[in-house]
Length: 255
Picture 1: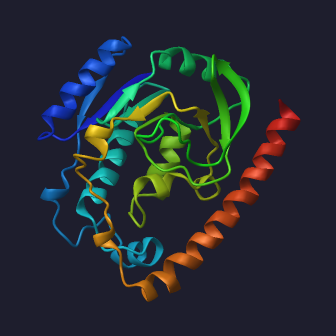
Picture 2: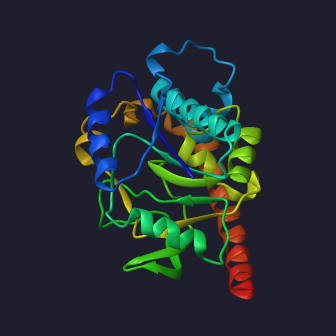
Picture 3: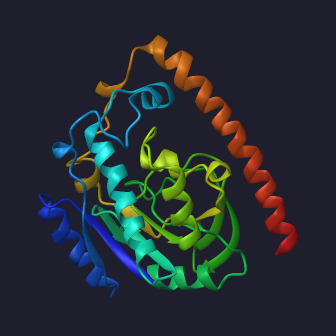
């Protein structure tokens, strides 16, 4: 397994914070310079303005585009390497001391996955994505299946199939990266998560000093959002529930 840390060149405070986090859990990493949204010029060949506006109901946020392209950059590096697994980390995270043991237990579990979501939000008491526990991994941590949308890409484990499918199907951005990769049925992958999250976002870095700043000022007119984003999200969540129910039944029958 290879570990990647995505960091903006100008975000030295975040890098210093992450260095301490990785040292704390004795985890080595490869530093990958993030794509800086401030340096991106529009129109961009990897961004669909129309689809983004309709599906996400917002104006373009160059910080989100930079984040999206940064994750594609890391996944490409992973595919070009000789490794079978990659742990992808953003630079505003903090690890639970048991992170390495949790990952090892998940990999040794008979329930197979292509993508394992490991990070939660800045509120450690609130789990996103409506997780349902499948199997205990270590102490309070469980391998889980999500029946709702799980936001954030602070930390995830991915295999070569997962990375290949994402690179093949998500070259053009039409949604933020966390929305885009959270659609197993479109990507032809199997994703699970760990509950509670063994990786969380540092409030002082994620909320107070965000480089993406996905605030309400980017929202489009209510009527545009209503006729585009609302129907898309309704059917998206409907497909998610149907797919996850079948995936859950398959897991129960096989394991």
